[in-house]
Length: 252
Image 1: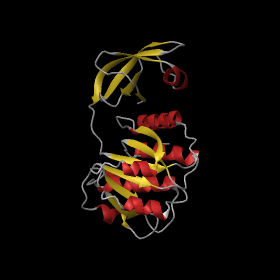
Image 2: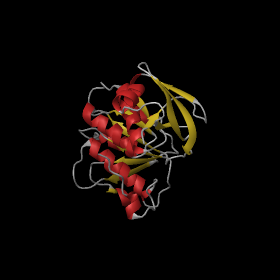
Image 3: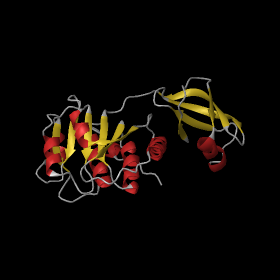
């Protein structure tokens, strides 16, 4: 079933007009027409079944019929990640969305790449990932800020899983066992790693739990996938699941 994220209220019998890329995708790419069903969600009103009631060259119109799933709250975990090159950053946004983060905060550190990020493109990637993976919301992506400013404004109620590549931290699973489920943030550094001063500043936060992701040096996009997978399996919506039910579904 095709799912689309829309930014309008959803209710029974409501009309949802679509234009531009979304209309083109339904009518020209997927070749749907009047009477065909799709699913809609907006991050607040759950997921709704809807049918195309009008299809034209300039756009189409859908009408919602019934709620398919009520809105639910996901585990409260956000991703804080240093800026990296365009391709791995896009992978990070896609996979972090699939792995359930509620927001993505981009950071500038001493060793980050220049900030040439296209927030609109990253938001589109997050939206498409949410549509495909079945979640009912889309994570917000924040413009890049300095690591020092982020740490200075840290909310003490939010625990921090600091993925420390220095090698002297406890393994991630062992470090997280026994911790509370949230709110949390996961922190991933740049391609060159954090400086010693940055590591000290991060570790000085009372909220910080330093963890190791293993003996190998991981690319930033790989580290994001590994860290979020561990967090979800220990403290998130994968905790307590049987092995078979915890395996992700794979799409082509």
